Figure (tube, rainbow, N blue to C red):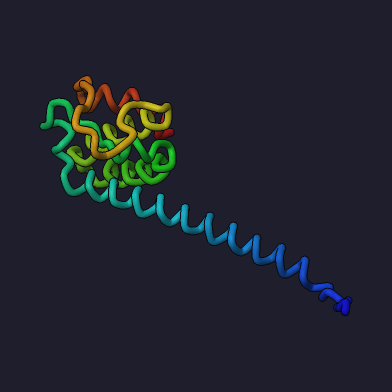
Length: 137
């Protein structure tokens, strides 16, 4: 006995829409994941701005890993720190932008648990302002 049941004309559309919904959910979850990571890294910079200038060889491994995804947010935070006159936060954010740029170019520190961090040159705040003027404007 053979059954020749007719297929619904809506079946291909339902499959397509379910695939589209799955891809959209995947994209949204990835976006939220990175926004949470960026927010935590910015909060760490604002909570302990003295960590960069006081720790001799410190680089933020989270920022190195975030890379260019965090540049708009850190530049926005830097603008707020410049407007408020918080020089300690300004210096930490300049260092953070340097870590983001280095991470975007495939720099050191692919995981946050690495124990050996490379040396960092210690520029003054004026030198950092000059160096990152291109990024800020």
